[in-house]
Length: 301
Image (cartoon, rainbow, N blue to C red):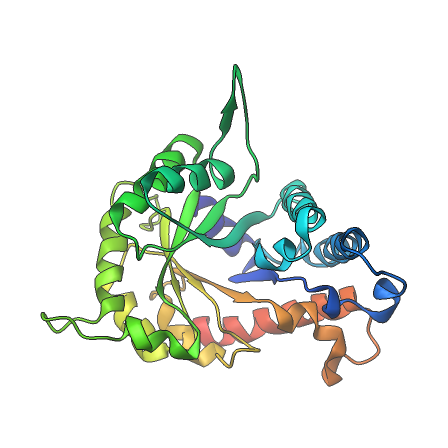
């Protein structure tokens, strides 16, 4: 699966993943008017997602659907989540589910089935949410990772494991020093490299990737050196403060090795002064084009 993602990035010359963290409050006034229940909110969110995806599908390689923004609207929101994934797949996009799932082995197996595999029902079997990649919390150790690796191998899927996250307080745990002088995030990075060693594709990167925030460029540079076969999912660009210059260190000498997420900067672009007067889908496309130019300038010089 990582080979497909790399090829789509290179085909479109765009290492951008659009984050569909679609809060009902982000929608234009006319799409929110008169809505007062979960079903109405979920229907409006899905309509917004479809129009935005239609506007950008030819210029971006991937979307990342953040499940929390759908869960909070209950069953109706989860239906919009599933419908959004299916619609993005039909548009030819690589689909990442950002759910940061994990638990002990048996429960991790259930999560792996839900997002990467299939769930058997007597003689039948179905895929609950047909994601190409899933974000995973590796801080439970290897028994919580093995079920995901198993289903990845069976279904040609991938995962991105949390290593150095973009939030300001990540250092409270992840930057702690171990007895050997390495930090917790470095040790997690070494585990990710090990877990991914058996599924390295033709471009030298594994289907087991890492979440590495653009807001921590010093740590990202260390990880890029220590994790030569690990592809980075890079949050934190734009609204969280990360810049294209900050995240350049996440890429290798050939400009491969990472994909950069932007959510609010694209979803809410129509509210920005620079895109004033544009419809939300037009503004989203222009924001994607501007982000592409910014990343290509920084990454490829």
